[in-house]
Length: 119
Image 1 (cartoon, rainbow, N blue to C red):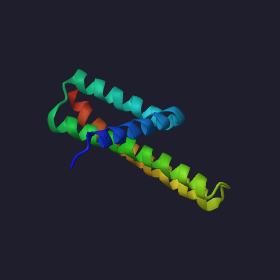
Image 2: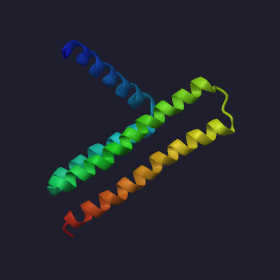
Image 3: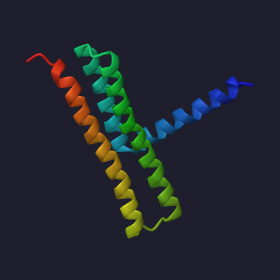
């Protein structure tokens, strides 16, 4: 049976997690700001339908990877508090995943948005 009380608690935990990452992670705040700016640009240019869905999908993927990066870094800090070469490499590789997704999202955004701009 469905429990609205349990669902409400789950949502509360999720919001607390978002607030925690937002408060502590500068990169996450930058990605959230970029997402908000993207939404404003989409509305301003009248971008809708499949193009809007694609833009939201790639932007939210960057945010999800940033959340995963935060989890990964905190987990590594717990299991290996002394930063060795392997821990540093693992953190850098996860950051690279966020970077690649960000650059891909930027390219996809440009491909979709630029044709809508009237010069």
